[in-house]
Length: 205
Ligand SMILES: N[C@@H](CCC(=O)N[C@@H](CS)C(=O)NCC(=O)O)C(=O)O
Image 1 (cartoon, rainbow, N blue to C red):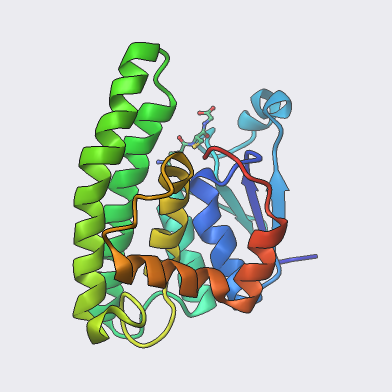
Image 2: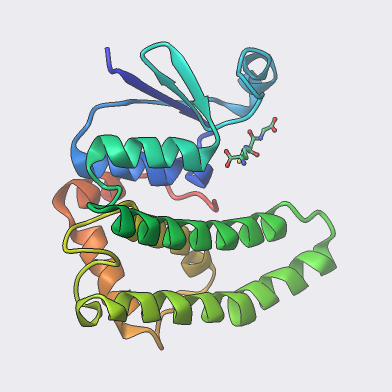
């Protein structure tokens, strides 16, 4: 039995960053996808009634970024020095800002507001964030490697994963960001990640 059990809905959502880090590091984990129909009962048994939830040897951890950072350390993907780790966190929190904007659109019930939200997101908010990410990428060895240091970190995986949803809406969003596009292709080309992505079900989030 694996030491790590990760509970989440059958979506990428707030669990996918952690899933891909497990995959990249080749660490076995139980990827428990809780169907919506089972969630109301399960919710009562979870520490703060939210997912993702990590069961690590019988101890429970919630909050996606706390889980991600713990697993990044476990997988050697947190950054090597304290400064590197702070830079990784800077990127991961910026990615999370984008995640929250996306959820604000995704969860919007009013169709006219929803339309306006996705337009602003894709053509105002996202390009601004992409310019920030490309700038950070270029600061490290001209942008031809990783966001931080000389090996894969949680920052690379976070940017990769988070752009998936918006790129599903408009595949041309990276056209003006060649370094980011090449970075995305490099991350997707990691053999274990490539194998995982090939089998992964396509979901909106
Ligand atoms: N800040 C929390 C948010 C957790 C959260 O809102 N999870 C949602 C799914 S993305 C959830 O569990 N929704 C079901 C519910 O609230 O009953 C995190 O990052 O983990």
